[in-house]
Image (cartoon, rainbow, N blue to C red):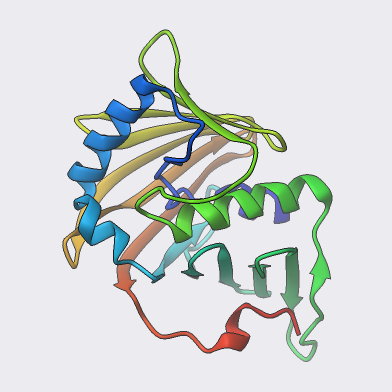
Length: 225
C-alpha cells in the first residue's frame, strides 16, 4: 500500500522542469503546455496548493478522503483517511517520511526506503512548482521519437508524458501508466481532477473536487514531529 501511495504522490505533479537541461524540442512543448494550463504569469504566482478529494486504493474498495498540500520549492504533505486509520506521507525539503495513525495509536514519523524517498522528493518538486521552473539537480527533459516528453533523473526512474493539445493526458513510469483527465479550472489554472493508475493489483483512482491556490499553511505542517 505504501508504495502505491508514494507512486501516486500524485499525478497532480504534471508539469515538467524548465531548467538548463531541456532540449529545444522539449521547450516548444513545455511552452505550449504552460499557456494551455493557465499562462506563465499566473503559474509563476503560485506559492502553495491544496488538493482535496477521494482515492480508491483497489477495485471494490470504498473511496477514501485524500488531501495533498504543497509549498514551494519542494515541501509536500499527503493524508489518506482509510477505514482502518490514516496514512501520511511527508517531504520536508530534505527527507521523506511516512506515518500510520490507527485508533488509539497516533504512530510516529518514520523515514521512507531510499527508492520511495527519491520518488516522493521528485513529486514534491513537480507538484509544488506548477510553472515547471525548479532547481532540481540531475534532471533532464527531452522528446522521444514519437514526440513525447521524457524526463530523466540522476536518481529515480524516468517518466514519459503524452500531451494532447497542450494538456498532459498520460504519464508512463515503472509503476504503471497513469491517465490524467477531467480537467477543471481553479482560479484560472487547469488541473486534472481524475487520475487512474493501472497496476498489477488493479486500478488506483484519485479524484479531486477542490484545488485551493495559495492557501496559508502553518510552518509545522511540513515538519515530521
